[in-house]
Length: 82
Image 1 (cartoon, rainbow, N blue to C red):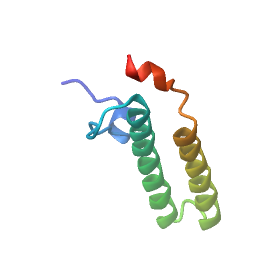
Image 2: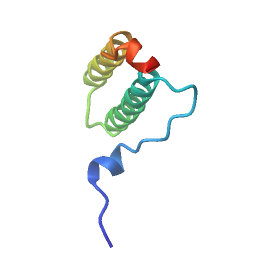
Image 3: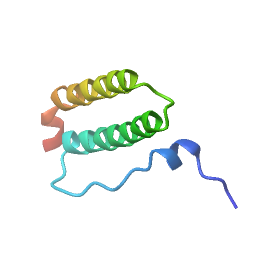
Image 4: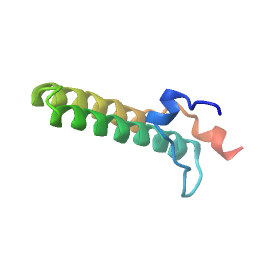
């Protein structure tokens, strides 16, 4: 039996549901990754492996990265229409 890829196991992706656009699809993937990483950070903080300050800083950095990905996805809107 083949072993699953560790990254795929830890960061499982769900299928996109909704009106399709490249911007929405990319943001959905980024949002899923954000949620998974925040979950791990919260768990590490709960177990005492991260301080509350470190947890806050890491989650804040992830939030800023997610916000940038929403505002500047780097996808040409005219390419979606073709």
